[in-house]
Length: 438
Image (cartoon, rainbow, N blue to C red; front, top):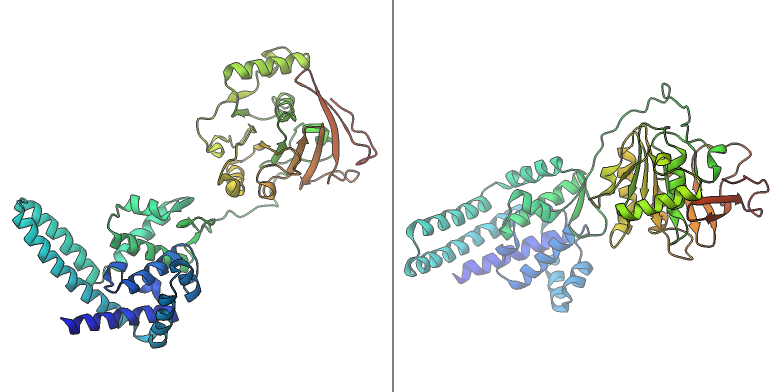
């Protein structure tokens, strides 16, 4: 027995040493953390697995940062000195074999306990079958089965997913199965099928290489008939799938600007969708009456071409109408959503066909840009900021414009009268020609 333990410890040390020298072996080995007898080896292997899930390389320093144990650091150096990567498969099999023998002995003890403590024979048999099946799968070549299960699930999963989603969907309960799934995911990362997503541990996305060829020769390049805020349609052209962001301070007039946009473009698109995230029916009615009265419009006739909608989901991108003029007032961002905003906007862009989208976001008073800053500027063609002092500023404009108009950093001075009428003009220091007002 003592000799067998010594041989098992030697095999454990050999496989760990091989991984420290050639980290790619970790993704190939079938050994699990439970296979290790020596607690030191178990801790090191667990740290390796955590680094792999985090998308970090397996090396001494990162393992030490996780374990904070100087003795283990010296121990790892010794392991690497005696590691032989070329023989890793032999030691991988030996570690599993000794582990299965040990666990069979433990199962025999459990059998005796179950038999003596009144367990029903059928229950004991079922428990034994399950455990024997687990051990058989671990000692035989069934890793491809788990790899295939995980691979099939990943391909069928769209968007971002977590390793815990994989556990739940595939019904993985035991630590052994979960470890096999993590290794399968690591292999898929290595093969370029998936990639780690964001900085969240165990978060991945499917690498999607599908594309549609762009037929620019047959494309209709006729600009859309649209009226843009602050008269910008007089100087720039707007096309299908165009997106704009209006980032404003609290009480800077985001809703007033967007209501004017909605009113002025009724009938220009198959549908005009106004998604109101912070107004219930009563407050929206009051706001619309005030808007109509300020502009001498009749309520509700003057806005009957607008479809007002209240979202029942935080996934606002799913509410975008592909062929409509979509107005989202406003896109609430909180917590981790700041880092995901470019992905959300990309999903909105992908939803659009012949339609366009104008999205309002909150801006902290005194900040140059809105929430999520530059990340919210990646996809939109137009990025406009509204400041509480009555200054609107073009921060980004990537669409076509007339030769006499240079849009970058142009500022508009505006004011809101009676809670709904927008009056504006170009700041003299930014542009010498006046644009007039509405």
